[in-house]
Length: 500
Image (cartoon, rainbow, N blue to C red; front, side, top):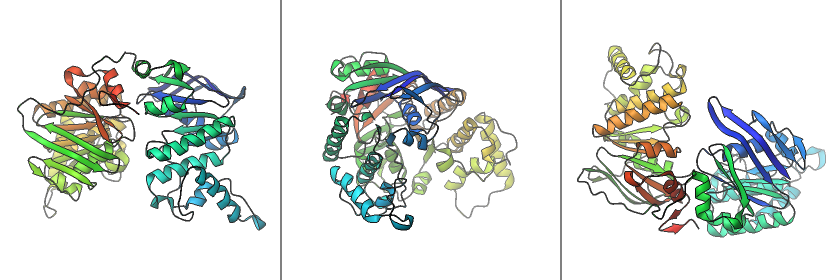
């Protein structure tokens, strides 16, 4: 039905796909697996028309096709349901579902009766009950995910791509979805789905394709693979008997800086975590496991629904990040444009912003003071910059991120929270940021870093907490860290569970 051969895709110097291949047959369910950075998301986006490959070919029914846009993908019979959702939040349910395939009546106007009938039929099959005129953004995330799937199915595709769509669904909803997927399979539709849940792989798929470092490692019948086989092909190493054990104790006599107990908030279902003075704690997990929510809840950006956060011996009830920052916390996000860089401000203003946040709003800051503070940071953290009066956006991506790091490190916070801080950063800048964090920890700063790069976490962390389904699936100490153990825990394969 659909075949990808010899596909290569690079983003600058970063190779995302290297001679990758994939084939899904008519009436077949294929699971596409891989760790963070393996290339599976890039593969999905190429098939969806969001990315164009540098080379290679895509064939449908034995004919080569060019997919340069989402429209091309649709015209070739490919529909995708994304984990990040392609719905328009400010539009209604019905308008989202029929967008682009609107049934028209007299005078070219929307035939609402037919549109509602189309939408209701597919939503009923998925067990979704909602107001058709409700704005999508007002609905629970699980309902939005089901609407995303319904929208893709309404396109009547020959090839259906499901990208981590079960991440926010409840068990009953997943079973309804799987029943419908099996119906579509019986109709001859080729289905490719991405998941991190091993139980889903063995329950639903006929075959498995596994990717590692942009390369297709294996394409095999699901019945011929075990969970240990899957971890082996994802990492290149066999998981040993000592899988990631749940061990939350810290034997060393060090000052406890952060003690989180049974935290609940949105995607975080039950997280307990401890961080000691001068320790670097890594937070690992596949996308959508609650890592960003945890970081922002500790900071005070989100309010916990339950549980406790004890910081420096006192239970916190921060109502905003300002409270956390004034009490010695710092925050670095990997999303520079939205959460870190003030794009219309100068380099020096961006660097000084952290210090300004900790000061009295009535404190007068001289031009000389701001300039000297920024120059000291530029020199200390090797930021390649011209004039400090230049806009921060004039810097390269790596230097922008070093600017953000310098903003907070210069204040010597007691606790530094980082959410994927080296995402999209060049190798050299990434190495420099890691060195800065390690040096800061040696001086007594406590660092909690969430990263999508497993290698980075293994290299820099003293301990790694692995998030799975909003809970801790394992804790790896320095002497026990290995890629295969980390990946096994990310898939829910620990001594406490099997990922089902």
